[in-house]
Image (cartoon, rainbow, N blue to C red):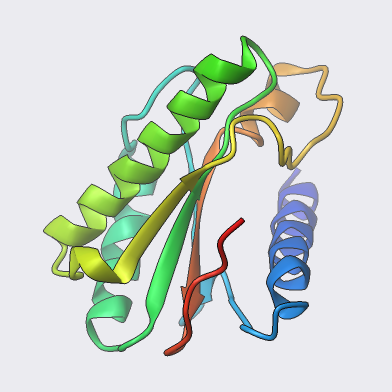
Length: 149
């Protein structure tokens, strides 16, 4: 299971980088060895213990840098598109607020909610597969404007 999770995180990071590399911005979701991926429970915007720890590490790193970040919120495919788009934006805003409480200036943090339009696991059938879609991804841009759709 650890190997599958590692492959998933690597593939997700590569997919994110590929999307922004085409714009020449070089965004990354890796921060000094810390993944910028925060997982959420079903229908939740609450940071669990692991999420709080990740955000704390990210905030410590970001306080030492000058770049900007985009927090992308995502959901699984259960529920309506409208509901999930709002939920994904609330997840992104939860992470933004936690980063700001950790000392990162809010004007360095953009947010975007994607709902279930960018699934990490397409056609998820099991609860474990759905869980991999419930996430926020923090992407760092070193002194560049963040990607925006």
